[in-house]
Image (cartoon, rainbow, N blue to C red):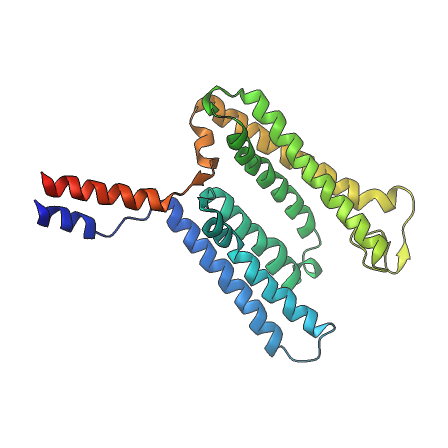
Length: 250
């Protein structure tokens, strides 16, 4: 009996497919930003803001580990979808978009990111729903549609406020694309980039809301995938020890 229990306890724990996918995406993300640092260091020619460029790339590597650090400190586990979404968005927005400068090759990359980010934020808003509501299976699909849409649009508005503020503080930054070929645009032309981003964000938010509503209607356990779970390692260890003692006495 004791040998059987010992063999069962010594068996390696199987990693779920979702967690394995998270580890793989994390590894790819980390490799991308390490490459970004190395490429920046060895690329020929001088760099404007060399120190700032290095700090930006190193800062992104630290940011990648932030979810794990928070999980470790506060003893909880983010949903797998949450972490994977963050990693993918960092690759697309920062690594490909900024560090690899895809904007100079594909000018509509910013539009793609706004649509994608709106979808992701709409889906990630379900994490807040899980925190606020206990009976997740009873939540109305219409409520999820409205909440996901409004949450995502709110994030989009905050981002546009950020771009406006940066343009007001840093001369010539042009985050809102109101300068073209060195000339300030006026009227509707000056508003084009901002309104385009908001409209694309609204479409992405609506798609996310519809997806959440349909999934909730078809499967009442849909929101379980977005639940932030607490980890009580001490309790788990004590429970295992009690079970071992009970088994040994029997």
